[in-house]
Image (cartoon, rainbow, N blue to C red; front, side, top):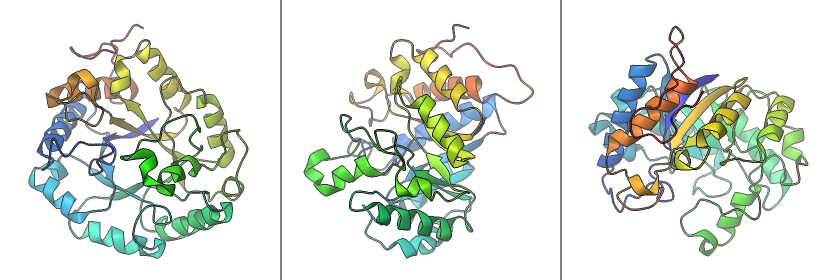
Length: 312
């Protein structure tokens, strides 16, 4: 079942939000506020999570609070990868969360935390176990990133790609399971209580295998997502239905992100939308279809302007 909906992913990271176009994140705030209102109108009990921030930046959260964003969400999420990308020690995790608690009075979820096997699988095992030790006692959700390695033929979603050197290639080794579907040491020693964050791409061939692995690992909490941009692909609704049906046994955080090129101020998935209400319409459709209020009927019609109108 869908336990929460997350609005965007790493909005303070240029790889996911174009803050050259929106330098003060005012457009982002407007989009979140519109999305939150739309979601509340469909299912007022559903948890709304502010897209996980990376880097962990309390000043960014204070900025969003000034726009009213904190009043519109139920949970604040953060991401951290101190063994691979962040310039702080893994043992500083509690301190980083205290910095967030000092500026926001919302529950905190760690919606992505992990370690790559880029240098050695033993490092990944250490990172997973230490992350669990530090975080499971102090936050309600820890989504370990990720289940699968990124396939070598795919492009990692990051700012400067190969120009980042080894930092770029670490994206391909974050999984507990290799591309050939064999487990790494970390899968064999997976810590029960951790959730998983696994993105499934449009018509992802790994979906069914992913569900099998999640069951095998005893995962209860999952974070995945629906791409707003993908909603304009052929047969998008059929794919979304298949994905969400396959994941229904897990308590899933459904992330909504990525701007369709034709709806952005600039034609790119990181762009703020020209009209924040277009994102709100997609959010309303997704929540109505996959997380409707318990005593309501399942919505089957998309709001005007959303390409994934129902066909059932």
